[in-house]
Each structure stands twice: as structure tokens, then as C-alpha cells.
Image (cartoon, rainbow, N blue to C red):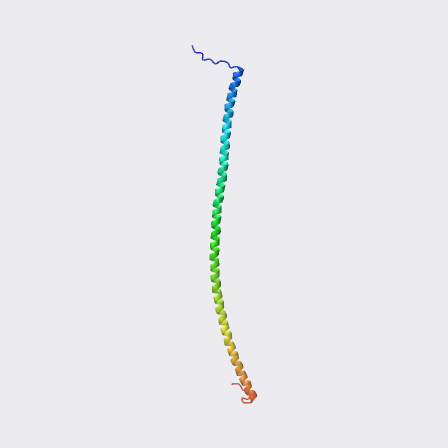
Amino acid sequence: ITDNSCSTLSPQEKLELREKFLGKAALATEGQLRLEATKARGAAANAVQARELYFEKELVVAEKAVVEIAKKTEEFEGIIVKDVVKVEKVIVNDVKKVEKEILQDVKKLEKGFEEEVGVLERALSGGDNGQRR
């Protein structure tokens, strides 16, 4: 006949069984702690990498924006230069017209002065009695 009854454990056997159990529990806990630490380290590394990628992308976007702004600035400067050249041409043409009008007025004045001088010369020489034509 087989004896299936449990024997009573001695206090020493109980202690040994408890130590084995606690050792296994400690090992399991240590493993879990290592696993959690590894996960935390990985998560932190991923977060840092994600931030680096984000800032790299932002830097690329910012660099593209700077290039675009420089391009638009050059285009704007080109437009301004063209406008200034047009305005200068208009001003030069206007100045030429004014000069031409002034010259015509001066010639008219000279002609008028010459006529007056002629009248005065004749009057002084006594030939015209000071009358104008």
C-alpha cells in the first residue's frame, strides 16, 4: 500500500522551503525590476530620439523657410529696382521737358530784351522818338 498522507515538516524543512520560495520570489521580482528598468530606459531613449527627429524636422522646415524668405526678398528687391528705374526715367523726362520750356522762355525773354534794347538804342540815337514797334 502506498502512503499518500503528508508528513509533518520539521521547523528546519519549513525554513528551507520558505527560503526557496522567497529566493524564487526575489529572483522573479529582480527579473521584473530589470525588465521594467529596460522598458523605462528604452522608452526614455525613444522619447529622446523622437524629440531629436522632431527638432531635426523643425530645423529643416525653418531652413526651407529662410531660403524661401531670401528668395522672396531678392524678387522684391528686383521689383523695387525696376520701379525705381522707371521712376528715374519719368523724372529725367520731366526734367528735360522743364529745361526745354525754361530755354524757350529764356529765348523769348532774350528776344524781348533785344527788342527793348533796340528801342532804347533808337530812342537814344534820336531816330525813333522812343516809339515801340
